[in-house]
Structure formats: structure tokens, C-alpha cells
Image (cartoon, rainbow, N blue to C red):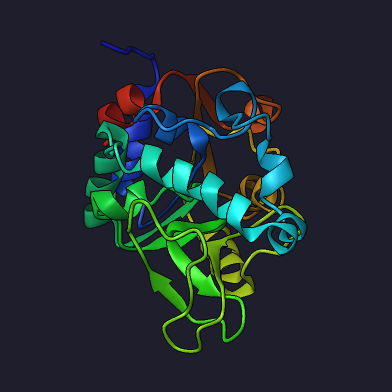
Amino acid sequence: MFRHPRLQEVRDRLTAAHAVVVLTGAGISADSGVPTFRGADGLWRNFRAEDLATPEAFERDPRLVWEWYNWRRELIATKQPNEAHYALVQLEARTRNFHLITQNVDGLHRLAGSQHLHELHGNIWKVRCTSCGLVTENRDVPLSLRPHCRACSALLRPHVVWFGESLDQQTLAESVRAVESCEVMMVVGTSGLVYPAAMLMPSAQAAGAFVIEINLAPTPHSSAADLSIQGRAKEVIPLLI
């Protein structure tokens, strides 16, 4: 069993806190077997994620981009939330003011039952019309390689934030407000290097929150956290809740 000398301190802080924010990244999904889709385990037909997850790639060859997303969807469809996902649902149920901010697009938090959820980078199980902007859920596996909008027949695209695109401003604003008013923030399974998510931890600390980092290895933010715990999310988080 995982052990750490300050686990009880974290439990006490989470129990006493009225406002808690959790920021999650690829590490929590990796414990469910979801590949990062960046780096060696995300290589597909000699393409990198950075080659395909762009507006330019979609404009140039939407069929190719949808082939890649179908491959991703087929992989993710075989995965289930893990103990960390479910522990965060329990934490939400007992916390008066709880917000879960995720950089992941796999939908596992939603599948586990999280309600107050801010998906910074979108959701791979949603599609958006390139013309009228209508967003709908679609869990077809596989999906048509040229899916079209039911409302206006224009081409659909994945409802995710691609390289070079801005985050949804409402989602980002809600996340910032939550961070600036929380008493405890947990940063789970993320290196904290991707902006604007990278600014959330410093913002919480500036507002007086106690920040706990949980990651497999130290990150550039570890020394700035009030407490940094090295371990797997699915092993550590259930012990804290």
C-alpha cells in the first residue's frame, strides 16, 4: 500500500475545506490505460499529434484527421474510469464548493459521475459543426469519416481544442474563478507546462490556497507546491478521500 508521512494532513485539509479545486492531466487517464497520444505511444501512421490536431490539417484533409480521431475513440472506448476518478466523485459529493478542471478529452471523469466539471480542451465524444457551431454528443465507434451536421448538413469536426486554437473563454473564466476562491487545490497527473492551465496553480497559491501536487515524478512546479507527492493517481487519491 502507498504510504506518505503527510497523508493524514491532506485528509484533514480536504475534510475541513469548503472550497476545493482539482486539476487533472494525462496521468490520471494513463492509470486507466489511455495513451497520451503525444510522443512514442501516440504515433499513428508516422504522424504525430502535432501534425493532425490543427485547423490547417483538418482543412487540408478532414478524412485523414477523422481517421486518426476514430482510432483514438476506438482505443478510449475500451477504457474505464479508475479508482482515482471515482474517489474524486466522492470528494465532490461531500464538498460544498467543488470544481474539477481537466485537460483530458477522454470523457472518463464524466463517465465516472463528476458533475462540476470544466473540460478545458473539450471532449472527444462531442462533435461540432464547422458552419452553424452546433455541439452534440456522439459515441459512435467508428464514426463516419466525413460526418455531417443534422441541422445544416455541413461537415462536423471533433469538439476539442487543437494546437493554435484558443480555449473556450467561458470554461476558462469559470476555471479561473474557481481557482481564485478555493481553499485547497490538488494538481494531479500533469506537468503543468501547458498554458493557460499552467497558470492555475500559481493563481491558487496567490489567492492563499494550499496546493497539493500528485504526479509520478517531480515536475517544474513541485518545489512551488505546498506538498508534492510522487505516486500513481489511482493509488494516492483514494487514500486522501
